[in-house]
Image (cartoon, rainbow, N blue to C red; front, top):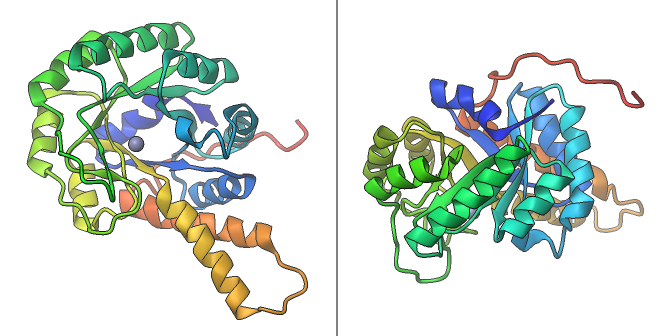
Length: 287
Ligand SMILES: [Zn+2]
């Protein structure tokens, strides 16, 4: 069932678990992710980032995501990850995404407020929810000065923009970690105490189990996972080729679905979103 971001995060916020948001770049990737969510009766977010458009164009991915969501027996939110402009957010809204992230984190505070507020005003008119980011999430492998989300700024930002979910910077990094990052859980607790809305953790590939648990018990309701899925799929393909080097028929599609399902299953359990979904009856194919 297709739902919005605030609908899918409401229960997570009340009962202290997180819904995984998985960047899926292919049919197999989406099928495996949905299978995992249905098997574990977990809500799930399918998302695509603007930087991924060259390899997975949004206009091609949208029908796939939306059809998978509508046919699913669990709640599914279809979300634009890291929209870089109002124009991209509007494109996603027109395609039927139920939620968009506007990433103005690199802008000066006031400009981020103004731009996030404008995106929210337009998205709300279309019944679409908005995630925005405050503070800088670093990139793994790049030595960036960490700028954590400021607590007082977060309150002003949330109130002035009217967003539905806030992505925080607490030492988390995008990409594949060489060293496991140390998250500033104290800062997260302060942001959570000062704000009621669901918080989002970016850079969910490679965070330690302890940090994940501390996050979901202190206000993080959505965790983005991108790199771990693509690595998982690549690993399974390599293993399969090594096991059966002379195989005539290569079941690439099934290997990819299985790998996607495995990675998503592992994260759903870690985020404690399993057994949280009501039993929904999806329409039959062809209906
Ligand atoms: Zn991110």
